[in-house]
Length: 211
Ligand code: DC
Image 1 (cartoon, rainbow, N blue to C red):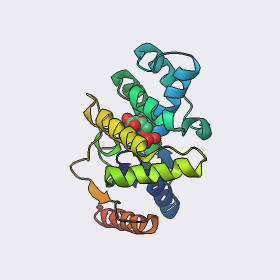
Image 2 (spheres, rainbow, N blue to C red):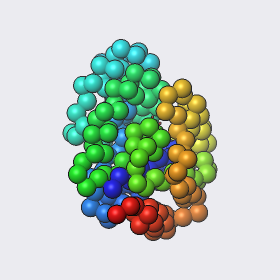
Image 3 (cartoon, rainbow, N blue to C red):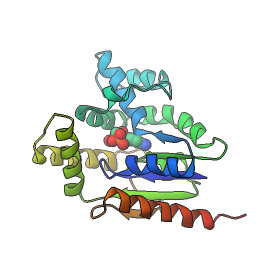
């Protein structure tokens, strides 16, 4: 069974994907890490983030495992990843590795922006996880504060709105819900509530599977 989760920044899709993977005993790929690692490699090499050939070379050089997450999670890296992710050749370079991951025997859980639409259009379960920009900004601001790097709420909200706009308006594989995805709005849900709702969506999709 392939479970595809898509949604905007800080919607909760990463946490849900991790928990669903543990619950159903499936491997999990956070595809945002691929774009973050590509951006990190460009920054480390002092290349501009919108340099197509350098970005493609960086994407080709990625190993799918082995991400140094601490260096990829910082506040600036989400923004940098979003810039790199708008380059069509970078997306093309990363498609195959994601599809291979999804085709593992038994299936997988993948989360990102284009999993249900482009990477795994035939996924058995598709969830579009969303929440209001204010709720997402509040969560992000709390994460920054907990990490000892407080950022004013208005700045976090502006970051999120800018990233939503870029991710949803790019020409290739923009952020959008697949026509057959179930939307899960987590604005008013805590993690336990969102997880219970996500499990119910996957179970319902699984019970509709032929055979
Ligand atoms: O999910 P995330 O915040 O780690 O993603 C960082 C950026 O990477 C996001 O703003 C857009 C890009 N991304 C993408 O374009 N497609 C994906 N499948 C995953 C992430």
